Amino acid sequence: MVSSVTSRGFVSLVGAGPGDPDLLTVKGLRVISQAQVVVYDRLVSQAILDLAPSSAEMIYVGKQLDFHCVPQDQINQILVDKAKQGKKVVRLKGGDSFIFGRGGEELETLAEHHIAYEVVPGITAAAGCTAYAGIPLTHRDHAQSVQFITGHLQKEGKAINWRCLAQDNQTLVFYMGLKQCPNITRNLLDAGLSAETPCAIIERGTTDKQRVLTGSLDDLPLLAQQAQSPALIVVGSVTRLHDKLKWFGVY
Image (cartoon, rainbow, N blue to C red; front, side):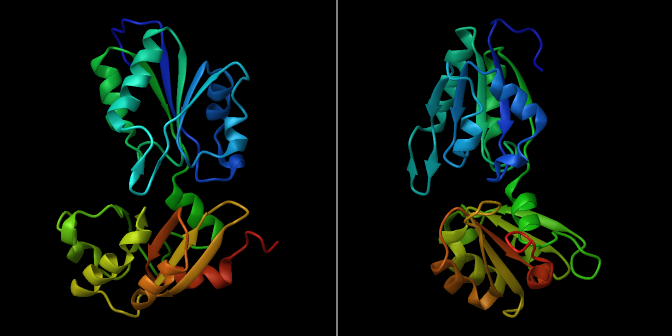
């Protein structure tokens, strides 16, 4: 929590989890149920939005590929303005706000305006979706490390150290990378990763519409053409365990 605040308002930055409303934390539930204003993203389920009081002001600021309903600087300003009105504000994001959720940027703005806040972590998509797909992120026989990478690549992927990623015995998880699958594949192959490296795309993970597509790194662009957003890309031999360990929708 921030000290030396100058307003009576308060902002709770809440991670709603990857899709299944049952994965919301107990604290997240409590905070949402007390909200006066809820500023929410596209991937937050309706079941979680329904937890807010009927009197709460609901403000949609969702983003999707190549289209931002509300620019980030305006989202920051909404949080500031509502808090300065003395409101209990919940900034509700899918997954976890600190993993590719721009939560840190929003808190920096609140801190600059001396507005009190707290962070309520959520289950990030990499953990939730792979668990529901029966794909362990680490495994003694497959991967001793895991890396989370944004799929919003800069031109030619120069912002990413692909040679560091193109290693055996680790798991790579790409967020928001469906459209970038041809670039991801090319860069990993050029960096030395085998074309036979197992991969998976988890579409709409943890929801009743979840679908898991598996293949090799060479297959990844074709798999991406068959998938819909939101989707998570997993690269590494742990994805071979999906057929053996899958449980969601089976039992």
